[in-house]
Amino acid sequence: MQESAMGQLKYSVFLCFRGEDVRVGFLSYLIGTLKRKSIKYYVDYEETRGEVMEIFLRRIAESRIVLVILSPKFMESDWCIDEVLKALETREAGTSIIPVFYKVSVADVKGWNIVKQGDRDKFINVTKRLGLRSKDYPTSEADFVNKIVEELEKALTKLETEEEENKLKMKQAITTKMKQAITTNTTMPFFGTNKRVKQLQEKLMMGIPTHTRLVGVVGMKGSGKTNLAEMFFEEGKCYFLRHLFFRDKIGKNMESGAKRDLLVQQFQKNLLKISNTEEKINSKLLLVLDDFSDKEDIICLFGDRGWITPGSKIVIVASDKSLVEGLVDDTYVVPGLNEKEGLACLSYHAFGDVITRYFLTRYSFLKTREIYKDIKNLTK
Image (cartoon, rainbow, N blue to C red; front, side, top):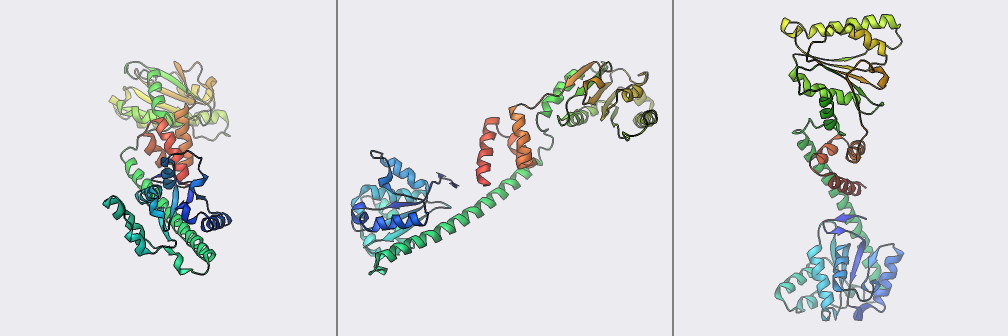
C-alpha cells in the first residue's frame, strides 16, 4: 500500500452516502461495478456492527478518494455531514474528493442549511469541485454508474502518477540534503571502526609515549583489519616525527631469498625517507606493516631491531595469528560486528555511503532501523 501524510492508504475509494436514498439499486450497481474493475472500496455497512464514528473517520483518512454521493436526504444524517467535513480536512497530495449529485442539483446543495456557519462554508467547498450529475443521464442509471467508475479510474491513475513523481522528488531532495550534510562529517568510520581504533590504541599504550609496543592486528579476510589500521595510522601519525605505512607489494611468486632482499631494501629506503634529519633518526616511530603472508619476511625485516627507537609503536596486520606469535607484545583480534554495526554494513550495501553516514550519525539504532523500513516502503 502507498502512504500519505495521513497514514497508511488502505482503500482506493471511500463511499459516503445516505443509505435511505441510494442503498437499493444505485449503490448495489455501483459496488458491483467497482468489484468488476478491481477497485478497492470501503462502504460503511461492511464495518463490524457497534463500531463508533471514529472508525469511519479513520477509514476516510485511509482512502485515496472520497466519493460523496449527495442525495435528497443526505443532510438529514449527522454522520454524512461529519464524513464530508472529515474528508475536507484530510485531503492532501495523493488524495481527492469527487462529488456525485444524485437526484439533486448544485443549487440544491448550496441551499442546504448546516447549524454552524463555519461548517456550512466548508461544506459548500464540495460543490466547487468538478462532479458528476445524475440529471445528465436521465434514461439510464447504469450509464451514470459506469461514468462514475470511469472517472474514478482516471482520477486514481492521475493521483498515483503524481504520488510517484512526488516520491521521486522527495528521494532526490533527501539525497541532496544528506550529501550536503556529509560534507561536514567526512571522518566518521564505518561499522564500529572508531571503537576498534580506541581499543587498538589501548593495546599499544598510546597514552604512554615513552613505552615501546608491538601489537599484531589479527582477523579473517574481510573483517576490516586494513581499514582499522589505516584509521589508526591517520589518527596517530601527527604525534610522531616519523610515521610509515608499509605494505608487502612484492610478487608472491618471487623466490623467497630474492624477495626478502628486495623487501628489506624497499623498507630501508622508505625508512630513510622519513629519517632525513638527525632529529628524526633518533625520534620514535609509528609503523604499520600490512599484507604480509610469510612470518620469515617479517623476521627478516625486523633484523636485530636496532632501528626501533624507544617510544615507537608498531602494528603488524595479519590474517593468521601464527604470523605474529613471538614477534609482538600483544595481539588485537578484530571482533565481529554487533547488531548496530551489522545494520550499518547492511545499509551501506543496500542504500549506499551517503544514506548510511547521514542516519547513523543522527539517530539511535532503533530509530535508524525504523527509518530504513520507511525508506524501503518509499522506494517500492
